[in-house]
Image 1 (tube, rainbow, N blue to C red):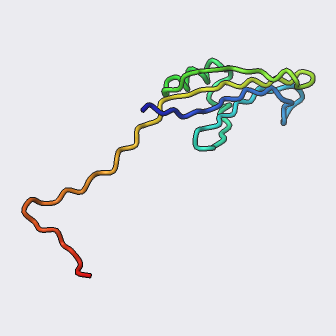
Image 2: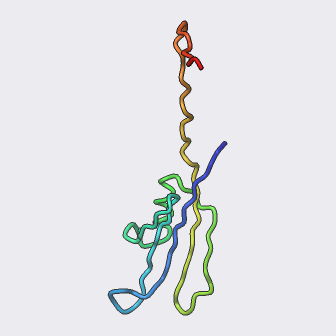
Image 3: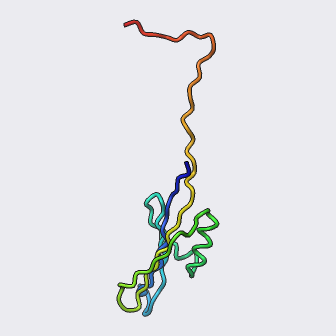
Length: 105
């Protein structure tokens, strides 16, 4: 059975921390619960989505939060990809002709 893992790319426009004005920040929320600022990897959502696509991620939904006041913007890009199959535990094999050990009880 195919299983999926999910991630979230968030694009946020916020007040700049080191200058007067606005900056766009991208944050990646990975399937393992990690949260990474990936702003340095690109300055557009398309650059980040293409990078995620190269890693096997597929965009499944996009949402915008219209409730933020003023010039703030918040976009969420929901992604998924097939989860790597975990190998089944190996069965132990008995050597032929070797008797089974039993514990007398």
